[in-house]
Image 1 (cartoon, rainbow, N blue to C red):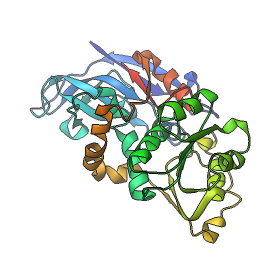
Image 2: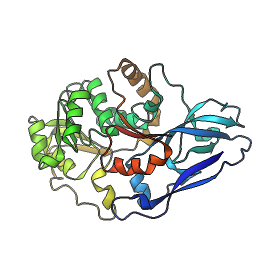
Image 3: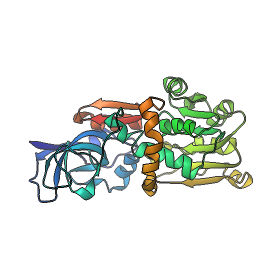
Image 4: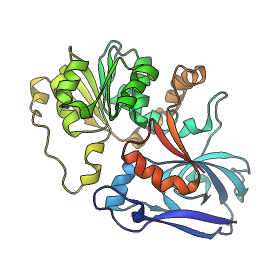
Length: 329
């Protein structure tokens, strides 16, 4: 039996391409005491990985860093018997040799698909939950705008905002089909394709009375539009900046209307989900019943086979996915 992994072989110039990666195959290593062999089932590809390509730090274990769910198929670690389902971050490989410190055991709730623990019930959903509850402190009746709303975190944020009692929920997306998906399937009150004109104008039309909260996955013109639309003492939970991931060496200038943060007494706070892992238990207790009942959609795009992982990653950066982009090994 062998292990196949992906390596990054060069830094991209602009958007990544398949030539930036290579697949390598090697024999599986012998296990030492305290180790377990995990056969990976699902691999996540995420926007933050584009930053890792630029600045390094992606090398980890047999593959590249990435959220992964797998099954223990051989073990010399008593706490990880064969058959245990685990979450770990040694991704972009078919297998991983891990210790107990590397993994978190998962017991999927009845009626919940395993893949959900990389999406709506994983770091993706926890990001949305922490951003809305801890950073933006969404209150019943708040009007909320979410950028990249058809993506993994955005679609989770929209559904969670509804559960929290938000008033009008507005999203931006990159195509007419995604706009329809937001309003038809995910419960958004309004949505727009940001290609259809200036984002400030599109948001003003979708939220004519303004907004209280902006969940930012994009930055750039979306942030400027949100600053215009935010009411007095509005809040921004800044999660990502996908608008500039392919131009990290030449970041855009600050929004032209940044001083409105002072004029309106706005609060803008960035956050990383790794600083909110203590919220996982309350998050799962809050969300699992709604996933099980079907009120919350497990919104995902799944490609088949490990060989599809590079194409899945590049496609995700281009907006080819709806919801979480996963690879089923």
